[in-house]
Length: 196
Image (tube, rainbow, N blue to C red):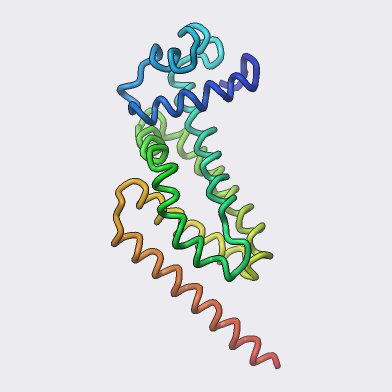
């Protein structure tokens, strides 16, 4: 998998088309022939680029789910007053735009065959969430660790909603985040007043 064959732009287009095909049909119901037809190439052409169907699954999932994360963070709050909008909108946007993708990702990474690849992907998630927290820290006026923890809770709530459309779980998670934010603001106000 380390030797990336073929034209890079075409390779990415194949990954994205294959991922969409997997998301529509599921892991077990998607054949190499279906992937090739969706890409408009032969089975041999896909195998030239990726070596095996397993490699397509692994690379397409990691590539496309990283794009989903980028989309999520592109919608992140612009400042502290924008947090409520983000909390209200993102679970539903995530479900609508990416629910199918999350269902497929968990189908892949929950499989014993791909579990190690899932661990590697989620180590990268940890790094990316930290980077997002650093970027948001200045905009929101909050410590990086606090934001990173909130990101984990919020993303988990959004993903759970995208998977199961469970309003009760979503409401409980969002209420916990809102309570944490209120306590953060209250604590900072007390600290500022003590320093006057």
